Length: 213
Image 1 (cartoon, rainbow, N blue to C red):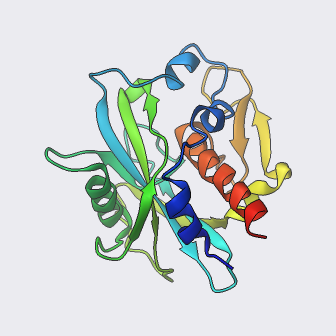
Image 2: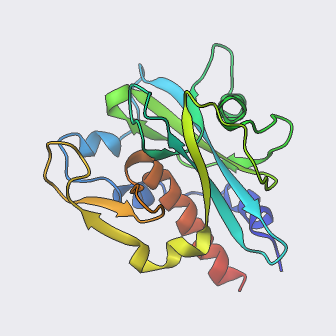
């Protein structure tokens, strides 16, 4: 049976779900259309690393971080390691650097598989490119306490379970509208840009599961 990472390298060379994947996790807010549009020329280039862990039984886990409560933005939210590109950096280099700084993944360890569709985040004026990489499993992670309070993993098969998904009010402060979320953590909903990026990977994994049972 072909491993998911092997299949994914080839699949990432073809057109991706992109907007189809992102649209499901954009709530009905004023800038919803902007979040589904091409980033403007002045947007800040950024990258995140989506780390996956493959096991001998062919199961695949995705690694998530929980942002520290001391951060100025998106505090306490589920995310992937990442940030803005430094001058002269590529998206891959930035994603690997941020993963090393935030949770201690050595830059030489991840096996980069490719990139998912970029997306625009209006509040920070960021154009984010998600980089997928296969990493080794670790019992402990070297967390930057200033940025990350927790690391956890979930199997990709979990996200094929429709009971994991719901629309919940009270997610966005002072805005009583239903927000699409995934219930992946005991107390923290997964929503927003992280959910948008993850949903594209989940759609690809669904295709893999059907093509290679």
